[in-house]
Image 1: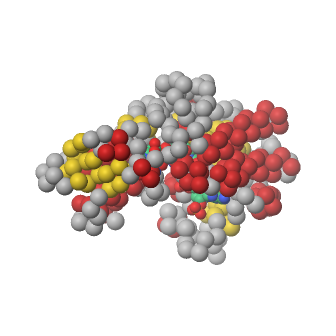
Image 2: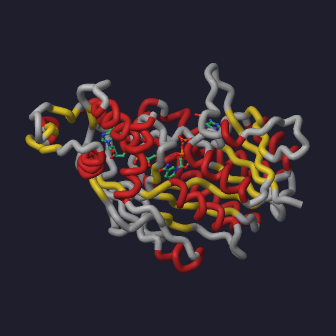
Image 3: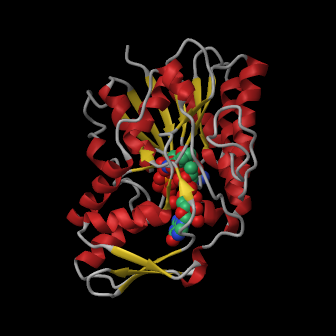
Length: 343
Ligand code: NDP
Ligand code: GDR
């Protein structure tokens, strides 16, 4: 009998990579997806099969993490061996505009799943993964950040995720559930959402190169992130639920780079050298050859409270899970620019 997994957030970046990984391992995969007026399955269309075929092992179900009855019914019907809670309003800046909704989906969403497991008596059957985040570390208190680093979240998003993080640990301790937090640092790919900074940059570079866009507007160029490749990170997620004991793990590369560095490298991949001048809101990036301004700062993209520096220490994951990142920062930027150039 193949293992059965339920993924929330299956239509997102990580959902797509994880669904593929699980299907390749022989799992039957069920995904919760939201009804939308336009199709939102673009990242997983290549994995979908005709549900009428007997061999079909990937199924989608309408649902929403803010709908308790729906979450209960899905878990009751599917009785998953593994539940991966990837669903979330995942944009930090948007969470300042929609704080209550973000708390409901990202914070209480995790609770609804844990409660369903408990009330349905599935504690010994259904393992639970919570998509926790390096945003929990927020304001710098220790560098590099590891599992024991104190949290100081700086956005409605990360504060909702803080609730989800602790409720996961509480249910593990109170009800003996196999429940894990993956504290994942930023991870990107050609499937990354188009408004996150990396993908926004690689799309803009490709359009500028092809003459379809004049200029890229960005916010804080000094923010530093530990950027890895999503394809590597979903392997760590799976490993966490396939250990003897549940635990929490930092997943990161151990390297950090600024938004400015990412931008520079992405342009270089398109054979454009950027020269920077000015500071803060007056900083611009020029094409070193033509002198044309290609990058400008727009304070519209500044956040009310920023996370300045993230760099993770993945030693525990390396030692206990045998996991390490495979794709370097340079390879990641190259992969994303190449993919967007093609598109
Ligand atoms: P995406 O934004 O790409 O995907 C989010 C997914 O959640 C989408 O499938 C989205 O559906 C779904 N979703 C949003 N709101 C709800 C809701 N109310 N009910 C059910 N589903 C919902 O995120 P990623 O794939 O990048 O990230 C996956 C998870 O990991 C998220 O929880 C994120 O917060 C967390 N995380 C991500 C990191 C990263 O760097 N990528 C790092 C650390 C944590 P739809 O397609 O309909 O919008
Ligand atoms: P982040 O990712 O907030 O780290 O959250 P994002 O790519 O949005 O921002 C990274 C940094 O870049 C700065 N920045 C800009 N960001 C965006 N989106 N757009 C811009 O124009 C821009 N200019 C500069 C930001 O200020 C920030 O410092 C991601 C999400 O995937 C979360 O769900 C996840 O939990 C964390 O990563 C780890």
